[in-house]
Image (cartoon, rainbow, N blue to C red; front, side, top):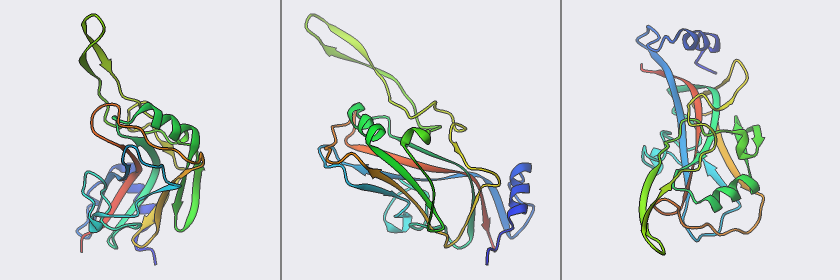
Length: 214
């Protein structure tokens, strides 16, 4: 049985009652996130699975904040209000073009597919964004040139795919799975464009978390 009352959670979210004024639970605005990576010069797989591994499977907080793979901890619930998809800023434009033109995302909750669509449907929101200048020896002179990032949408958190009211309430043991499906066939990834190596993509679920503390 669901230990969390959806109406109460919505009321707390609307009122930003983060503490919940309770010794047994607290709630707050939060995001669930996960990453998947592929090395340069590697065949792009048929699919990528997000949220399949948690911190208990060897991932770090730089890669995910899910304690368990595929579900929340038993004492947690999460009200999903929006979803996002993006890639790290050192992604090569060739790889990004392949993702945008040849893949689609399947957002699966409670063992059911809720949203399906191409990457542009699910903007990246508040990804880290940076520009830099480098210097290289050209034909006649050492000329600085700009290095820029390629983003999936304007870098602000509220730029996400909005989930219809009253949102999706996920509780402990409810399944969470996001898949990036390769519909373009054989492809080999390029080297990262701006330092580092490989291609790393990430997904977010934005909303409110409530956690039992006793």
